[in-house]
Amino acid sequence: EPGEAIIVTFDGKVHTRLCVPKEERVHAPCIFEYVYFARPDSIMDGISVYESRLKMGEKLAYNIMERYPEHDIDVVIPIPDTSRTSAVQAAYVLGRPYREGFIKNRYIARTFIMPGQETRRKSVRLKLNTIKSEFAGRNVLLVDDSVVRGTTATEIIQMARDAGANKVYLTSAAPPIRYPNIYGIDIPTREELVAYERNEVEIAEKLGCDWVVYQELNDLEAAVREAGENPEQAYESSCFSGTYVTGETINDPYFTKLHDLRNDTAKLKKLESTGSMQAGLPPGSHDGCENLSNDKS
Image 1 (cartoon, rainbow, N blue to C red):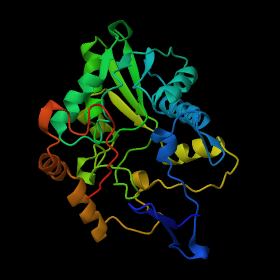
Image 2 (image 1 turned 180 degrees about the vertical axis):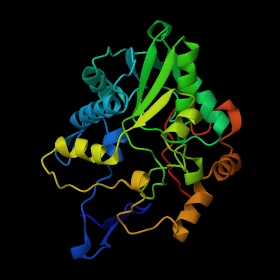
Image 3 (image 1 turned 90 degrees about the vertical axis):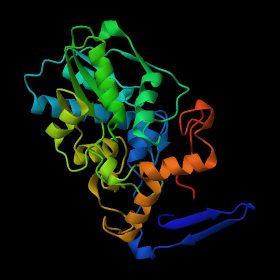
């Protein structure tokens, strides 16, 4: 039920409680599931994740053509893996070829949750290799599902340039992430987000690309709704909008607590105290497995 809390204790007992009055309950699924977390073959609330990502790519392409009608994009390349579906459709609408320019090493953990900027930067180079022939002398549009800290995007843009790209453009299937998530996604503190207090021109300069185009939030929500059967469906999109379905505001004490738990310094101290920095493994790698602890204290 919307507004229901479920707690499973270590002894296997399940406790449930409806925490919101019936008249205030709103079914608002997390829209980031459709952008990134869910498998493309998933069906959630009657909505095909694959179809929603196709529509995200379509709306991105129309946005690019509106913003840059005289664009000189030669090729569209996804940043693997989640953005592939959106990139295919964006390339189709733009009338440009879709190519695979990056090959992914599947044994590296997610970089956006790794603590430490240098660790994240090095992990990107371990995570991806370029196919240089797809970049050499071309104006490349890179398609990503989202941009969080910008560490991955910055490194990938430089990899594209190192592979011989003439110009590098970046587009994101998600809007700028400017706010923390308080419902279970380990998105960093606001100050660590590349879109924090920056516009698209400033973000492009920070990332090192020629321009960047983000999805509009209303287009993202429309893409997901159009893939389903409920045109009035509400979504939880707080990391983009700063509006939280449970009523918190960005200045609440809870956000200070999150900052103390999630900032890079706190995470590194926690890893050092647990011995996770030993044996030369990247923090969060767990011998190549994903770290799903997600802010356990």
